[in-house]
Image 1 (tube, rainbow, N blue to C red):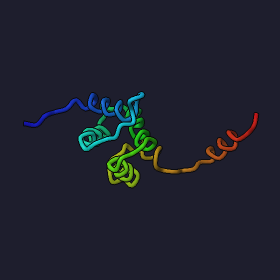
Image 2 (image 1 turned 90 degrees about the horizontal axis):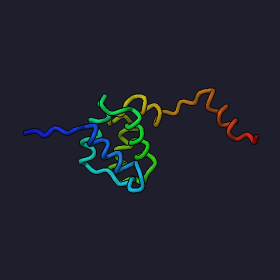
Image 3 (image 1 turned 180 degrees about the vertical axis):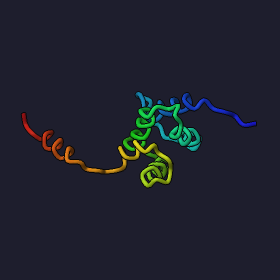
Image 4 (image 1 turned 30 degrees about the horizontal axis):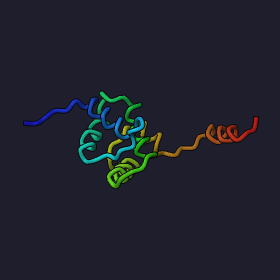
Length: 108
């Protein structure tokens, strides 16, 4: 008998453990990946929630499993929504970016 999981609730729980609050920044495990991988493809999970998880994996201390997941996302070996892949991993410099950087360095 196959057990079905409530994907949004399971993903939310993982997100809270990894990325939110004073008890956040706990490492992911194999069981978490069994939720994360289908959740990244799911329309039930908001793009913003997916982005928070990806950002947490990038920014926070990582274990070996998270290092592998990050590399797979970066090199397209593991699915990541196209908007998130572009945002986090593709470095397309537009004309606007240098102007913003110059503006941020200006003393007002």
